[in-house]
Image (cartoon, rainbow over the protein chains, first blue to last red):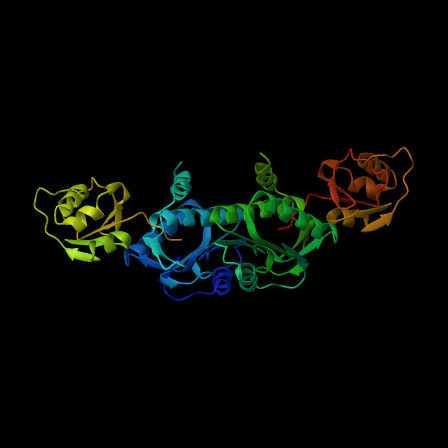
Length: 147
Length: 147
Length: 83
Length: 83
């Protein structure tokens, strides 16, 4: 179980390798990488709530482990100023079978989107900046795991 | 759109980088890596149907593109002799949003499992070898996309 | 107790965190917000739409009915948008 | 036409591919398999359980009712297990 909140970029290939190597029970590894989309913006600033963030991400990972048989899970979330195309978030899960790996990775992302205290502020190409608004679709995505 | 069938190993990090770089419309990249599980086996041989395999994988990718708005998709499947822990298959999809990336990657894997002409033969630690049997759960997983 | 603000709530109020001592009849998060609104126009404007406000007490999600007695750290912020 | 066998079907029959010339009254995949079974015991044993056999005609999935007339390449194999 691992959670990291950092300004620095990360290496998805190295993270996948570290997660899956050394345990030949693992048959399936799923990863999600979230990137800064570039349309109309020059960059994005990620603010978070130090202390609570790490706690919230660890709780989400614990929930995933309780729900699926996982050999491993990893959440990395960047903070600070990010350019278009930059990696923001990385989630990876490892399990014996693909269904558990897919579902748990999607579950972690859905919970992260509505439960982890991060806020995005976009800097527009027109010189203005604005806080990104939460999407109702994200709430719905989280709720479906509670049914 | 890309499909590769090869004996050689591949580098998931490099493949993810190639899939996501240069297009800042991409907000979400999902990858699946399938690995040889080691319990009771010394290795596994992947047989396939040259010609039909590439065609079947390309058709699955086309179906995924028709169903979700994807910026990119990649399927790599290895053939030949593989050791425990070795990578067998890699599927990656790139989209604006995470739901399309997750669903399309899972869709491709579900179809690949029941439609692409690959067969696994395991070499047991007891010296015997056996062809892996198809799982009903894989048929069900494919069928849910047809409802 | 310490009250923390994030994102546009922090920007509108003008500080990220502050020590506050609400009167004894302020017992819930909702009450705390109503009391903060009386401090000045910046607070009143920031909290005009409380539907847009989320709460954590001592770094755990909470709601407006939650008791604040004994809390060390109360955080108020807009819906999260990470990931 | 060429008939191809894969996985345990190939092993049981002993070849991976062969040219065959079934009589004119063999018009479907199912008929082809029944005709192959009459060739010798190896074929009869390999095709004993036809529920376990899948088919592709000219590299496209097909079923037992499919017409074989004009087919260049008919592949018979167990359910696939890749991925």
